[in-house]
Length: 448
Image 1: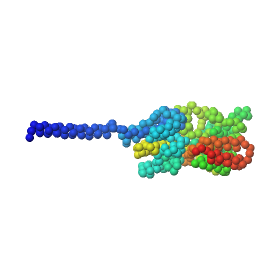
Image 2: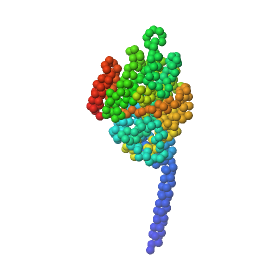
Image 3: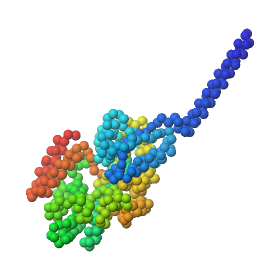
Image 4: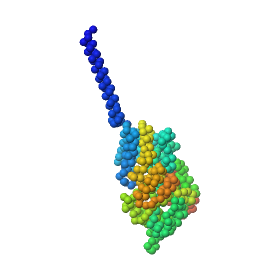
């Protein structure tokens, strides 16, 4: 046997073993470093979001809540990167999101304005949350205001969660009421109360005989129908019972309300200048223009507050609720993690409290909105002794309109019908019958 060759082979084997052990140990060390510091991070969640406030009042803070939610999420998911494209205007956002979906590049999670929820649900772009909700014992749907949570329920599935919302409420010029010796309406006020106050305040204040002080501006047929339980068209937009008694009562009330101004068309400028008592607006506008930052820009010449919407004889003090939701893409490959991020945005108390710091809406979590901390913040921010029970009552009786395909078209036709009837001297019930036939024919032929 060649001993020199044998020794050389053994030495070579030893070197190979040592080298292999060195490589193995290095890989183990590097793997630990990667896990600790996240250098291996390749998983990514993309969020679709628009720039600026959902409520149209720029404050420069909108991304702040999202950034804090992302940071909070990554504390438990350090191997995930969460990114979003900034700078997309709210007006361009629905079209941008639709294009992303058509190109198969939609975000894993995206914010959805209330009017666009039905569109994305109808085309199957949203992932059903039903199983995730059912299996997650840490998530409690009852923590949300029912109407806000219902906003994400479409086509028999929970397809989105509410992120922030604002009810439509009645703004009141307290300066005029005080001058006329009239108290602020209570929570359960009615059309009769509304009309009585409007009659008292609609007059000439300078003795010229020309009316320069008015009862209401901006109270629409939608407000009247909603307050009187008139659901026209139905939630799915399939039929339209325009002959129903609540519809006739609502149109009759609008006629009496409009007649008070003797033909003068009351404008938003009249309210802004302090010459109108009532105007419906979203609560987000109350928060914004009662704030120290914006109080000098609008409605600054008079004292004002807000109350619930008045109830019709066949209805209740109902408020429309505008809700910004978040939904999950049906194509996401990170279902579990996107769900956790969704919960962080909508269900995490600390994140939801930030809405009162950086936005003008309110939290859909009742425990957050109705907390003492929130009440103190709203009162300090608005400089008023706002009664939080008013907001609670508005939320309890709020509803979310369904924006089905063709919603804007049929609502324009109903607007035409209501205007036509108000301008006509014909029999109201006969006009209802005529327009009922026209509206249902329009619905039947609507391209959907």
